[in-house]
Image (cartoon, rainbow, N blue to C red; front, side, top):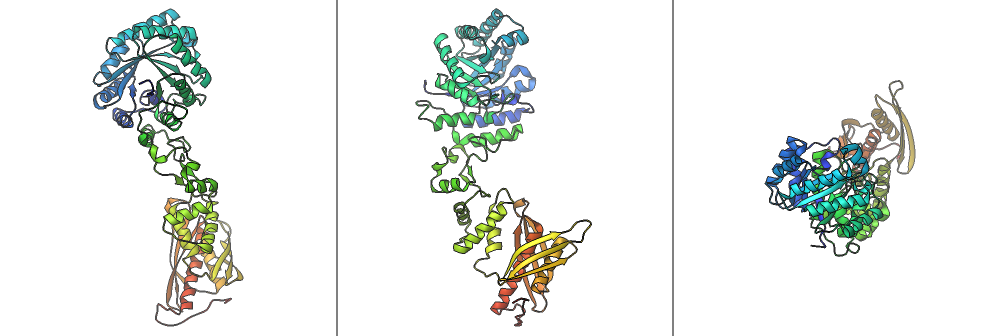
Length: 520
């Protein structure tokens, strides 16, 4: 179809040529099966002549993977083409892709061939490939730096010999979109025959996707690309970006369509990243973890009102699930309240304001706030509708291997400011003693634990205190990125619980001993 843009995936060939990537047969087969689920038109499975392992992997894919055309890459030597055919022959649909360089630099320095010899090689290679299959692709390597007239002569020879796809590789990422588009238009005008024009653009100048799309607007109907944009040096044009650009901007690419199942894009990205060991950058378009994440308060408010205020694609359409509201120091009250609501934590008015202030304090110390953090904040800071008679205003600790651990605390006890300093065996011990001294309360610490909330650096401290005069045991919790501050908050929380018990007249020991706190 004239309006169908074929997606030619070269993840397993050009992508595997990335430094540090070496896929075994099973890994290549897993990726190929996902590419088939994705719905690409062509899978370039490898370079069969390169090694016995690559030959066997290509052959395994040809035998097992159904749907896409299975393609093998080959130089122009007949032994290369014969080996390529042997590898892809088991496939129901197969293609031989042969190439030779046409730039003066490559011909002189690498091939050591004359222009006439290159022409003869192109004709011979395509002719040999046509003996095996009528689906033959030809590429003039380093096309963007080739003499244009000479390259067109070679392309015409390839087309006359039976090539059905003419691929124009920007092998070293030298092209510029307007220039590359003009090349595609001129080739179509000058080279006669029944063939499909294809793009193959590298990302050395960060223009691989832009050049590929420019080629499509100029008449190319096949794009060679790779999942996550992996490939030689700076990589290839990224498959997911190309597909979603054409899908999302249908108003611009009017009448063009791709057959890819976009909901499989994120899965393909994860599989390729896992098997190649190449991580996907967080802000990678379409498949990056932040591609649909929002932290800025203004953006969060907009997305919560209408997703399309800040998203041009539906994350579910590319397999990314839902938009992500990331709570951090840039987040606003709307996003904070919305997350609490989804967690089933209904907080309003002054309680919400207090929790938000506490959230901002933690967010200044921690990059991303998790759901567990929010639950701890609400429990720690709000405590339902309970009254806090004792409020921890500040903690200052000093200590180390030379000086004795010392803590100074400032508390507000029913509005009265009390300050105390104490030393201890460690800074946690010192701060607890300072709190005891400030309140006049001599409870015995019977249990103390500190946990990292959600495996992060923030501390959730739990304490249990026994007050012998009352026969009461109370527990407290405190949250902070600082273990000493978390401990101090947990200690104060326990004292507040004791105060409320005494105010209510309850006594777990069965004896009414109201007690008192200094300064009350």
